[in-house]
Length: 88
Image (tube, rainbow, N blue to C red; front, side, top):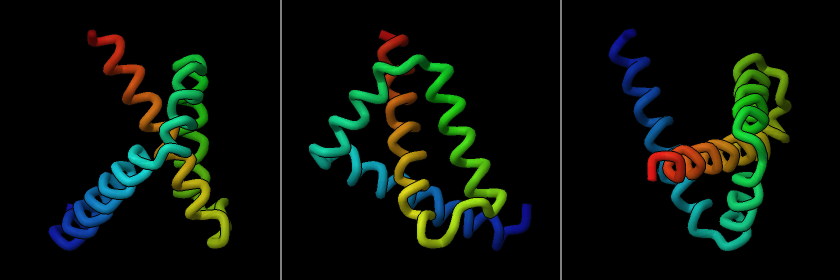
């Protein structure tokens, strides 16, 4: 991977982490993550993959991009929470 591409990816990943942290601190999104965590693990993985695929393949309109990215991040947070619970 080129250094410019790596740098761009790192900036993107850092901003996504910061955005996820903000979402997890918002009471409305905390509730959504808890609700998502009640769904079957495989369903969440499938939903996450579908959203990422839609984003990467250009199927998401610019107007819907933030909404779909937020959904993907919330699903990712729910998956992460489920995995942490399994480790306990």
